[in-house]
Amino acid sequence: MNDTFLRACRNETTEYTPIWIMRQAGRYQPEYRKIREKYSLVEICKHPEVCAEVTLLPVQQLKVDAAIIFSDIMVPLDGMGISFEIKENIGPVIQNPIKSIKDIDRIHDFDANIINYTGTAISMLRRELTVPLIGFSGAPFTLASYLIEGGPSKNFIKTKTMMYSNPDDWHLLMNKLANGMFEYLKYQVEAGAQALQVFDSWVGNLTPDDYTTYILPHMKALFIQLKTLNVPVIHFGFNASHLLELIQQAGGDVIGIDWKTDIKEARERLNDSSRVIKSTKEHTYTHKLFSMTEQEYTKTFPILQGNLDPVVLFAPQNIIEEKTKKILDSIPQQGHIFNLGHGILPNTDVAKVQDLVEFVHQYKRN
Ligand code: 1CP
Image 1: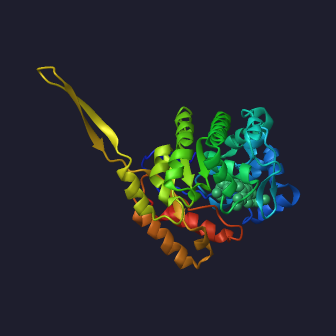
Image 2 (image 1 turned 180 degrees about the horizontal axis):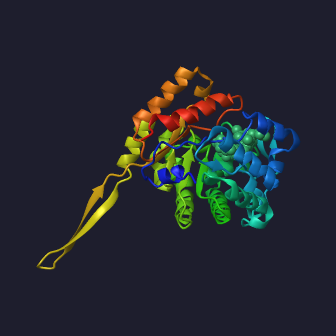
Image 3 (image 1 turned 135 degrees about the horizontal axis):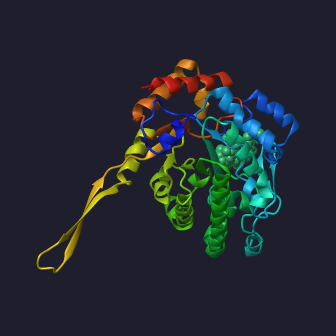
């Protein structure tokens, strides 16, 4: 069993920097495209043996240090009574977008029985895998944006309008989604997932002020609950450099850094806001008029994941290596999981990804 990825998530020393790739199973792989000729994306998810096969593809082909269950962030919504479609070249589409409280009331608690194929695929995979398996979910804001806009969005006008105009409805929706995603992630861990990632892909479209008011309480509630599952949780926000400290405050053992952010700067910024108490000394003075607590802080560095620009994989080999080295040289090996700074793109050359994995494995090998 190669547990390098899990060790890195726990900030333990590793022999080399582990790497996996967001969206590592997908259209850039000829084998995936072949399977997609026969099955739609949702059909892949609904056939555990096909889902397992697709999940294993990048592990065998790329030699990455973790697998991520093949699914989509929309899948668990089925288990909450929300129907959706994934349209070719568009993405998720909702037939009846959420407009009012009546629509929110129709969303029910997450029922794992409705999507039990995911758990079956996870258990099957655990029997075969020699690297850890990551489960995942979308974050409440990202999911809410699809539910309210009805599909992918550029300016999130309907979403923000609900947030500003009907904050009670908004908070009710976020609360339902946060609870649903906790139950879905718990279900994945019970089935065998050994780590989790929460994708907040569109949260970068909010100001720090709005994140604090409309998102943070729900994310804190989600991450506090996730702690009880005792697996490492990665928190990834895309386009979210301006929200990094808030994302860290929300929770997560590992913070995913997007490709637009300088990872060294991210480490320094989060270092300052992640001090933990090393020791507490209780001083009780002889006259007993008061006691004072003195706390000694240790600076802990955050565990980071990231963050090569996915488009760099289209560059010549020497440029890919130079940019990869720059990331690896800018922060220590301990507490770093290499990844792209967002999902791998459809036309990426598989050979270049294989070289990237090999390069990362060799560069800092002890
Ligand atoms: O191995 C893997 O990682 C693939 C599994 C996976 C994951 C982790 C898929 C399959 N989707 C996701 C997560 C996901 N889905 C996110 C979060 C990650 C991110 O930010 O990239 C998001 C935002 C979605 C929604 C989604 N699904 C989109 C984006 C549309 C938009 O709003 O711009 C798209 C295009 C999809 C379809 C989809 N899901 C997955 C794949 C491989 C695809 C591509 C289409 C296909 O093969 O049919």
